[in-house]
Amino acid sequence: RSGPAAEAAVMGYDAEFGGVVVTHRAVVADETAEIQEVLKQWSDVEDLHLIITSGGTGFAPRDVTPEATLPLLHKQTPGLVQVMMMKSLQVTPTAMLSRPAAGIRGATLILNMPGNPKAVGECLEALMPGLPHGIRQMRGDK
Image 1 (cartoon, rainbow, N blue to C red):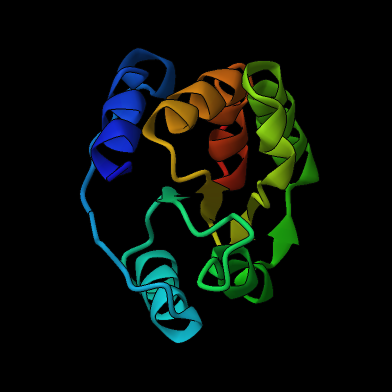
Image 2 (image 1 turned 135 degrees about the vertical axis):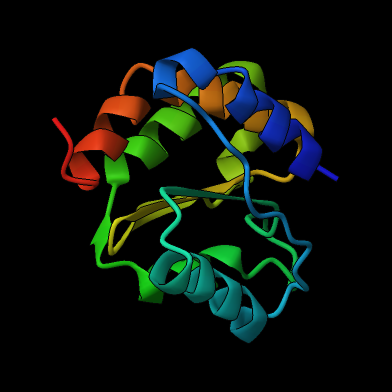
């Protein structure tokens, strides 16, 4: 449900990133192993620069996206999580119930964002002052 919103939000920052191409999309069941399989394929084999997941970050029993993501990360990026949380809390107090995660696996940045389509755009907007530079650094570009 929020995948198209995430894609539209990313495409809106084409100039900031120096070109954006969305190459992969998937709807993945709320199962840790399935989420991890896709994240590993896209980061280790496909070598994507950025993976945005949406949903699975709440309190419901099926919300396991952070638990699936965190063990795969080589480096966590707590500043990105803090920015997403600060932005979300400006919009709604229930953002405190979100459990976003973010970090680097190899040369891929993985962001777990809320499932609300509007929240994905808001979080991405909040991250944009540093995200393109961070991805260039991660990829070894200056």
